[in-house]
Amino acid sequence: MNIYDTANRLASEIKQSEEYMNYKMAKQAISLNSELKERMKKFDILRYETQLAAMQTGKTDEEKYKKMQEEYASLIEDETARKYFEAETKFNIVIADVNKIIGDAIKDVMQ
Image 1 (cartoon, rainbow, N blue to C red):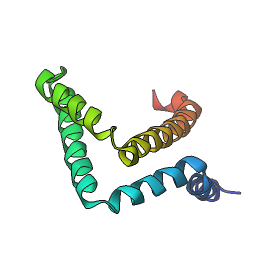
Image 2 (cartoon, rainbow, N blue to C red):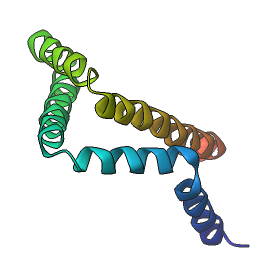
Image 3 (tube, rainbow, N blue to C red):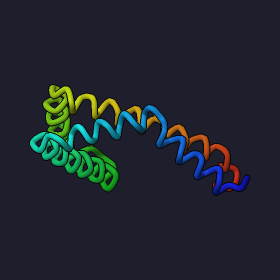
């Protein structure tokens, strides 16, 4: 078996994982509620801008960070949004773990 077959099998297994399916269903549930979908879109933009500003400057924009926290607290009061964030977190952990495994396997040539 070559490396591309292995990568394709991994991709297929990820798509069949509970974390992937739960995340996909949570995203679909958000898309069925236009008001919540818009709020989530605005939150994602705010989260991205906050993270980008922190990476660019090396420090957190406290005002943006506080606004992001407030918006998150408001969103998780909605059960659909809360389930989405939980599913997103679990899926991101799986992807981070897979990336770490691959990174650890090749770190000797990446340094």
